[in-house]
Length: 297
Figure 1 (cartoon, helix red, strand yellow):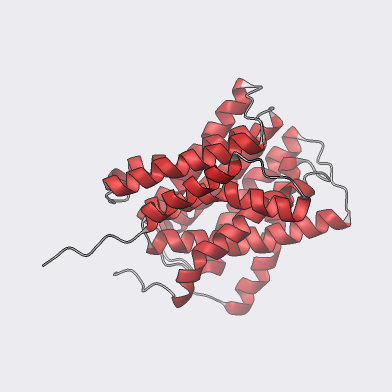
Figure 2 (spheres, helix red, strand yellow; figure 1 turned 180 degrees about the horizontal axis):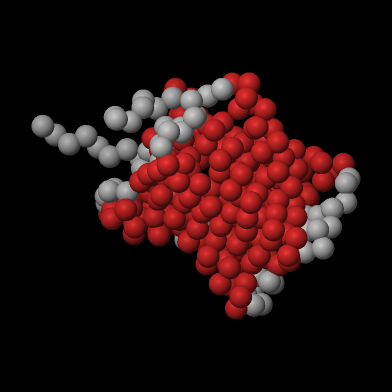
C-alpha cells in the first residue's frame, strides 16, 4: 500500500518534540530524587498502560492485523521503551555520568547516517554529512561545558553504548518496517512491552523506593503525558513520514534545549563554552534538514 499522506500538524512536530523531549530530562531529574530509577521507569510505563487501556476500549481504533504487524510494534517497543531507557538508567546506576551518557547517545545521528542507506534506503549527501559533523560537535561542546564525562565503570560505559545502539536500531526499524497503526493501539503495545521488561528489572535490581510527594507526582504526570504519550508519538510519526537521518539530527539540539530549560526551571547556569556549541548544533541542523534543491529539467 502507498504511504499515507503526512498529517497537517507534522510541520509543528519538530519544535514540539524538542520542547517535550528536552524538558523531560529536567523533569526526570526532579522525579529521581524521590524514586529509584528503574522503579520510576516501570511506574511511568504502568501509568501509560492504565491510561491507554480504557481509551482503546472507548475509541475502538482499527487493531493491527497479522502477526508480522504485532511483531513490528513489539520490536519498536523493545528497542525504544525497554532497551534505550533501561540501558540509560542502568548506565547511571553503574556510575556513568549524565554528561558521558549524553555524549555517547548524541552519536546516534552519525550512526543513522552510516546505516540509513543500507537499512532504510536513504542517501546521505556531503552537505548532510557536514551538518551531522557540526551537530555532533556542537552537542559535545554543550555537554562538556555542562557536565562531567567521567567514566567510572566499564559496565556503565557498555550500558551507554547499548542505549545508543537501541535508539539507533529503533529509529531505523521504525523507518524500515513501521506500519500505519492507530497511535493508541501502537503505543499500548509498545509500552506494555516496556513494562514487561522494566518491572522485573526494578524488582531484581532495586529496593523499589518511592516517596509519594507532590514533586514526584508532578514529574510522573509530565513524563507520562508529555514524553511517553505525546513526544514518542511525534517522533515515530516524523520517522514514518520523513527521512530517518533528518529526524535523528534533531537530537543534536536536545543538549542545548535542555540547558536552556534547566536555566529557566532549575536556575542551572549555562557556561560560556556552551553557547558556541548551541550555535554549531543549530547550523548543523539547518544543513541536515534543509530540503535538497530541485534538480533542473
